[in-house]
Image (cartoon, rainbow over all chains, first blue to last red; front, side, top):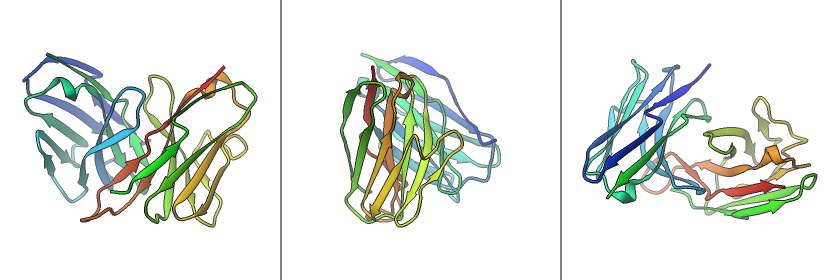
Length: 110
Length: 117
């Protein structure tokens, strides 16, 4: 069964901290891995896409890495800001189907 | 990436009734996907909709409960039929599009927050 796990489930940090969100998946035969952000009651905003042949992607203060062999991805957020407060979802693509983790709820305190 | 317009954004419905959710994409796409997000849960794929063929449903979801239409390459609807309070969720449509400048992964609509009373 294809399962995606995200750790931690929730995280509260002071503004300015660097932080790491973790995602692990049981089936390493992935197409791609995508990180999303979801604000309360809203849809999903794509943050980073890592294709299966890539090891990492960067966008601004965000950096995501992928290690298919160990079934892991990490999302690194540098210099966190209160506006980063949201739920972060990891989604692994298997043949046109996204399997989502349960998410990490992030709160950045000012 | 593609831009998806989803409506309604929210609705409160009586049990036993049906609600149709619409998604319009600003470019032609082969497949459209419908997801459900129950309160406090992550997203679960309901079905994949291809133009000109019947939708493919995931385990636990059936066409009688969630009929889907896909009349053309830019539009799809999901109907939630004979609703009960357990259907209260956020429903989202998604596409896997190339986007400008290369492949950009999946894009999601803004979601429909459904409350069944």
